[in-house]
Length: 250
DNA sequence: AGGATGATAGTCT
DNA sequence: GACTATCATCCTG
Image 1 (cartoon, rainbow, N blue to C red):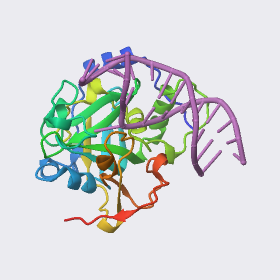
Image 2 (image 1 turned 45 degrees about the vertical axis):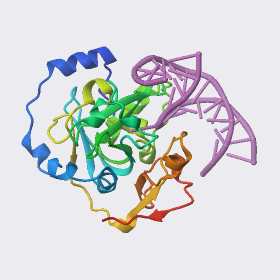
Image 3 (image 1 turned 180 degrees about the horizontal axis):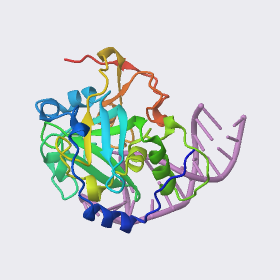
Image 4 (image 1 turned 60 degrees about the horizontal axis):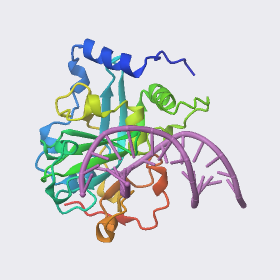
């Protein structure tokens, strides 16, 4: 295993970020998903069709591009969704990106130390939470970012299946934080974007209840979580799903 | 392989 | 002051 060259503190990292304005290399974006992909699609359908697509992240410090296949997502709807930050149509400083143009990144901070990454969608206050990725490019950097975060620094390697199998884990592995990524437009940002990856047929999409919802019984059970059937990279907590209902796309 | 628990601070009431 | 769209760690088996 090669040694990592990253050893910057958080503050140095942020300084670099402001200094470095690297030219955008067009070949990065040949397969980028644009407004055609994000607009005019319901939140639920966006959550489904983003499965198999590539989440791409260019690190400001090194210019390295990390990539991972989206294998798990969740829909958070607008005013009617008890589990959504936009419940009752409330707009706050935090959830503002949920109300912005479809394709806007919504990064929020939770549990005192973690970030979660969403994409706003059509539908007032709706967004899609990216819950898990199958990493395909830059795994070594992802691993060092994960290890840097959990300062414990026991040298144990992290298995590829455990690198991005959770909403906060993928944010750590992709260096996604509120300060740099929140409100980025993924259709034109050079820090974060999506690319065409693999077409996932409808019969390979599983719908299930969302994770970590404690509020309302009805909304807790709604099948608004989607993942690629039998994929090894979905978040660990949910491999014990008992009910796997195939979804009808249309 | 899986259950229990503590960490830790932004956000909202 | 209460509650997190969670995770790493420390157990048990």
